[in-house]
Length: 393
Image 1 (spheres, rainbow, N blue to C red):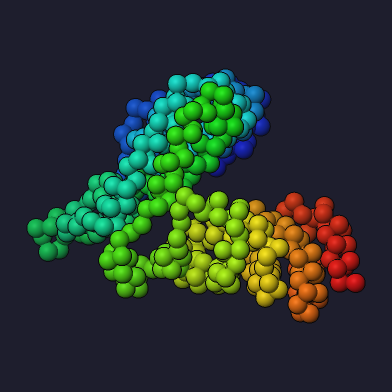
Image 2 (image 1 turned 90 degrees about the vertical axis):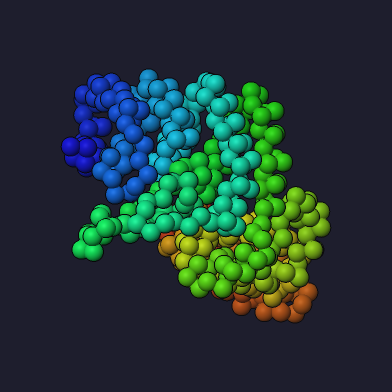
């Protein structure tokens, strides 16, 4: 029945009885979620149903029909962040973000509790890292581990009757608890920033406490012994930047702003994707957008100091990203903007070094000709092309 509701949800939202539908269905959704038991096995029908209900709530248009129900929905979503599975917590976070962006509800005690919850996650992170990487627990044969024992979705084979040789073997996919999930941790800064934007005067002192916690998180590293053991396992490749033992410390931002020339000798290595991202499947699927965004910020900041060879490498890398449909559209847009910001630098460096700046700009012109497919750039196409044409002339 819930699958049928999900499949026909657009018809429901356009119905004249839509407001009445929300008045009846939302309390029932929330009651079902609160009264039901949290599940950590992906194959459980109860987990699939709970996830489907949360997805339907997330799909409800954030218009005036939904406004009266905002407070009750947010109350449940905030509470679920601490108890639900990783899959469901990620949906809860999206619901919280959408409702706050649209309705800007007044600050509540739940928001203060949420911020304390996030701070506790950062405080406990060294223990979590040690459990995942330094002292991983051994899962006994034919047993289903608890969600606290796994750091990512893990499949295990379990015999229904281990004492019998002909017993059936079933696969169980364990979902970690959201509060222990590194995927959830990656999403939390977005919502903390949103809360700060909405309630700056009320939570300024609280948010300032995050800075030392985040700096401590940046400094976390796997021990050299464990890193060496992990690197030797071909089936579990880590990002290239981890393999390079890339330094990250509290002075990183200050160095970037005040002495960018310290990064110049290393820039050619950062344009090498095997170093920046690595060859692991998980790294390429999950870290690429963040890696490109971070590198683009650095390139933009030090672009005046880069030699023409590095500018050429930057153009090659970010021009390729524009045609990569596997990347989010915002990364494609960012790549286009960065290329435009490099135009004057390429021209001036080419004159200083008597280099091949014209060839690089021609490559950029070819890329920009295809840019209307990239969101938010088509309206600027003529201005951008004129800028490139002036440099080429």
